[in-house]
Amino acid sequence: MRTSIATVSLSGSLTEKLTAASRAGFDGVEIFENDLLASPLTPEEIRARCADLGLTIDLYQPVRDIEALPEEEFTRALRRARHKFELMRRLGADTVLVCSSVSPHALDDDALAAEQLSRLAGLAEDHGVRVAYEALAWGRHISTYDHAWRVVESADHPALGTCLDSFHILSRGSDPKGIEDIPGEKIFFLQLADAPLLAMDVLQWSRHYRCFPGQGGFDVAGLVRHVLRAGYEGPLSLEVFNDVFRQSEAGPTAVDARRSLLTLQETVGLATPPAPAAPTGIAFAELVTPDAAPVSAVLGALGFSRTARHRGKPVDLWQRGDARVLVNTGPAERRDGTRLAAVGLESPDPAGAARRAEALLAPVLPRRRAPGDAALEAVAAPDGTELFFCATGRPGLPDWRADFEDVAHPSRDGEPWRVDHLSLTQPWHQFDEAALFHRAVLGLRPQESVDVADPYGLLRSRAVSTDDGAVRIVLTVGPAPTDDTAHAQHIALATDDVVAAARRYREAGGPLLPIPANYYDDLAARFEFADGELETYRELGILYDRDAHGTFRHCYTHTVGRVFFELVQRDGGYRGYGAANAPVRLAAQHAVRRFTGG
Image 1 (cartoon, rainbow, N blue to C red):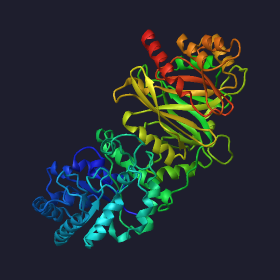
Image 2: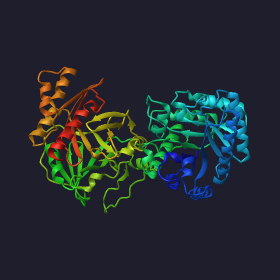
Image 3: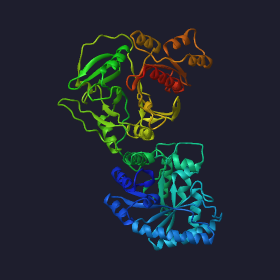
């Protein structure tokens, strides 16, 4: 189906919004009245600009407070509407959105509303315009889609139909199944938006917290299925009011928006992009640093060995069991610039994963390869992290390890480790985009968002993972757009004995994050421990959590640049990430930074 987006969903001038929509691959746009009024272009110039960009103008919006009015008020409303219809003819738009009235003058009289909407539709028809009547969730007398449809049906005018908006329907808890009783030809337009599930005034919810389908808690796909069964054949259009989107670059937001519609179309059976190839493990995590010594010291103390070096690049492979960390000193970085720059994902079908990414607007990154280098495909996550699709040790497929030469290294005793999870902190304006990207492009399952108290604000966190937990990525966002701590990232390493691992790390000279004594006093009140167990945790800075499935023990190294390591022990099927302990960990990290200046 054709796709469209309301200009109110993007930031910038009208021309910037139109360009972004076109480049993202949308077929059309809804032009929001305020965007037109603020544009220096004439309606004819906007029409020509859209045509040059390959965009149709699918809707002009909105006309407000026009039905069920006293006759004198309605006469004034018709005069206003006539001017809008004449403007639309110049603009080349043939459908106008009319919202249910919130005017204090509006009367609770469905017959009057139908009669006046019929007169409005007659005027619109004279100008070659159709009227799509929409129930606002906060409408004064008409606030549900089925009520709006009864009024439209009663008006019985060929130029009058209904507009369905997923937010207005789902935010009120209306049952969308009744949409199937509306004739498809009378559904003139469909607007889509998702939203997090919040308990708040619906108007404020709508104006500030909408998001693209798949980023919130609404069953937008279920609603679309009902609309399609009714016989609707118009565009799928996004109308999203969101404070973050209003401050973000229009281009990336438009790509995020179109990806949401591509994913939605796949879900409801309207499109068949290449199937997801969910990753099966973490092949490696790559750190980029200006100075390898500090992070190498941490890895050495953790029991990693430097096992190989890249044949043509300044990249070392550090390994312990199945946990592999690449240390790259190639690109120029700030002195504190150690960062997690790339992740290797084990893929059951690397080529298929790349095709999936391309189809969902995450193009494979161009790479300069030396002769003989493994032909690995990589895409960029919204935060810029490069994601490589790997097939480590699988015959017949490119193996990234073939690019490395073994180096002499001392043997290491102890049980093998693996990467339990990675934590990637997102730019403030890309948190929802990142969750959708990892679900749609990579096939990971999002979990619920969690708010975490930081000493200087509130952080949001959302994990995405495979069903079996082989790949876990925690996406976090700082408390404010300018928060410098929002760049912290970490690698969590799974061990069968976190106490022994923490002792060995400390004995090797590695400093563990100190945890306040008050935390352990509270822990003693919440849980029962074996004799001496809590004292051991207190000594080593080990934190503890428990859920319905098992227990979780974890501790942290100091931060190197913007990266730190976590040692974790999951027992009994524990599914979380120690979120209850995050405020204590964050406060401890702030205290260390203040003390060390790092």
